[in-house]
Structures are given as C-alpha cells and as structure tokens.
Length: 353
Image (cartoon, rainbow, N blue to C red; front, side, top):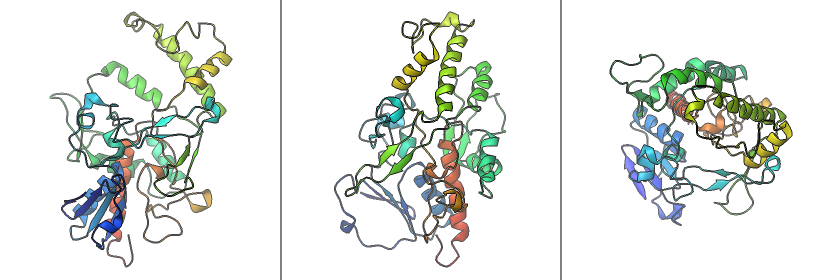
C-alpha cells in the first residue's frame, strides 16, 4: 500500500504482505526513511515541511492503521502488545535471569512503538542530557534537546492550573497532566526516578538467514552487580514505604513478591533469587548505534551520520549514548527534530543527506 501525504510517499505493509520492491514503480526520491516508527514519521513530517519541493519516501513494514481501538483509545494501552501491530520480538535466553526469554513489544505499524506504548511524556533530567555532550558530542545537551522536545508537543492545561515553563505549544503531539497522579506525590516519585538507572548493557546482532529473520537481542539484564543490589534495595524500600501511614491504610495486601513468599526477615540471597526469576522489562531499549566518537565505539557523529558511509544517518532511540531516567518517547521526538534541522541545513550541499 502506498499513501501520499503532500510530498511524502508512505509505503506500508510491503514486506508483511509478501510484496516486493520490484512491484512498485521505479521512482527516484531525494530522501528515503526506512522505518515509519516514532522518529521516522516525525522526521518525514518535518522534512516535508522544511523542504516542500523534495520527494520523500517513508518505508514501513506494518500497516498504516489509524482507527484500531487498541491504538486510538488511551484506556486500552497495552492491548496492542503481542498482536498484529507488534513485531513480537523476544530476547535471547538471559544468562542472569535463569535462561528466561523476555518479550520485547515493538511497534510494527505506522507510528511504531508510539502506537503501542502507555502514553507517558517526560523529559528526563538536565544532567543526563548534558552528559551526552561530555561524552564527545558537541551540541547534544540539555539546552538543545529541551528545545527540540518542546517543539514536538502541545500542552493542554486545565483552566487556572500550571504555568508555561517546561511545556510545548503548537507541536503535533498533544499532552496533558494526568489526574491519576496526585500533586503531593508527583515531586517525590519523579525526583526518586531521576536518581536511578541500570548499568547492565547488551547487544543486538543480525541472525543468519534471509531477511526478515529476527535479530538476536541480548539485553544483558542484571549482568551488572550494581543492578542486582539496586533492585533488591528498591524492593525493600517499597515494602517499607507501604508500611507507612496514610499509605498503608489504603492497601489491601502486597501484590509482589508477597509476604508469604518473602517474609519480613528474608535474606538478600532470597530477594536475589526472586528478582532473577521474576524480573521483566518496562521496555525503552536504546543505544545500539550510539552517538559517540568513533574511537569510543560510536556509530554516528554529532550530525547523526554513520561513520564510514555516505548519505546515511540513524535517527531513533538507538543513537542515545546514555539511557535517560524517564520515558524515552519525548527524547526520540527530540532526536527527530534535531535530525530534521541537520538534514534541512545540509540540503543545499552537494551529495548531502
């Protein structure tokens, strides 16, 4: 299926339906974007706005589904996992999780994982983005990413509440403050999450065989000793917090791990055993094509151009050199916004992309 939005040709379900590229008319495009996910759609949109005379092809393996309830109704978040809009990927057997394979929902639909996720929008912390620049990426810092993320969304406030600082206006992604999180708890929890993050790292490799064979994804969960200790302490801390009033009065029982499984005097070894057989992911993989100097193992330069190639850039969560302590969707939109700036700025240069 080929759909045209202004100067953008969107080709979807080509691979999934058994079609071949040879079936399509042979056309030359100025820009080809492989993957109509969160960043791909945003990039195509900004390029079409900034370069209205350019021809842009957006390739997406999944359908262009804009009406399915599991995608369009916020309360159905999570119901699209393991279905037709999901690549249905899993990790390889995880050495430090007793050989378990962990499901990794990834969007196989126009919009990618933004069509599957739970619709959280936050920015991470200033220090985390500034660390990107300190790793050898000039211009990649809180100031530049903050501005890019603001351009991507439009905040709708309730009358008489909140100010203008830290929220976007006029962007394509619509955001609101969720009434489900009480104001008096927000500062406490958000500041706590900003202080934590995993140290374990993994890898992704191409599997032998003809495309579209599935990648071998090893997230390396709990391969760092710090992560094991941190998860154990987090579990203990949550249990202690649940014993305090007035929170305790609103709780019926401990859902996980449960006092019958791990009693009040459980040892660290018992906690660790439970963690390794129970831990799952809340998604947000990143960093497989890191934005770093080439000497440090980087894949792309500060303009997101792949080292050693011509006319090839990577624009998605894989370029993040460090994971931020928050939902990465806003960061992915910010990366796409910055990539569009780079490409539009280079558009007049010979042989540029």
